[in-house]
Image: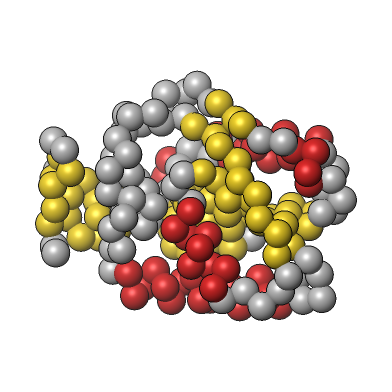
Length: 178
């Protein structure tokens, strides 16, 4: 499908699933190399990063533990509300090699807040893997060790990303049609 409608918005095809898979495989090869001989604790940022995380782990060949963090700033809107709510037990990460798996870095404010809280737990190492990043939207610098794709500052759905909780199941990524 080249165009879809979700609720009251039209979206057009932006990134096909095969391109996403290529990026995920490439990231997994780097992660396997960087963490060879070590155990990795993967923190999945709920809900959006679930699809990316599940695909990424299929290609990892290192021992992994999984935890989840809920960090919400969008609610049902298309822009961040600015009110961040983080739900996590950060004490689980003390002395661990930690990889935060994020769906998209938009403003960078959410992941920055999570990183600040995580650093207090004194993990052995912290790295960020994000499927997408919108550099034009960044309000703060975020060091991303593994990045799938830099994209335009358009609103997107699919591959775990949603519009008002709809569209996460789409294999391809769609951008808001003007």
